Image 1 (cartoon, rainbow, N blue to C red):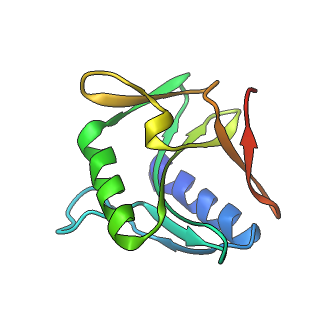
Image 2: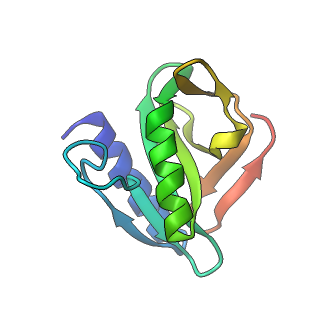
Image 3: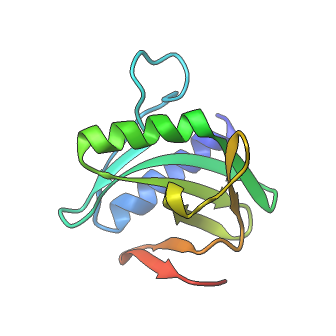
Length: 130
């Protein structure tokens, strides 16, 4: 099992324990006819489609076409698009695509990004700084 799959499974368990119903879409980016997020979750108050990444570095880049597919799916499905990054030794950080720094080809998410953390039993909590 790869690092990305382990991170997705960790996220699914964290979301379930925080009161969300969750569906995971293995290999969502590859080999699928129609785009879909890695994880889809709802707790009857908030519904999110999450593209997940895992890294040991201080930042991660997500291709613009990958984010566009996420946004298109979420618009059609009626949920909020989030990019979820699991930073080693820090945990999960979730950001909306429009809050990310953009390069020519990618969205960049750093360890010190403003976003949400996911706290077991409480759900998404806004964090302004680390």
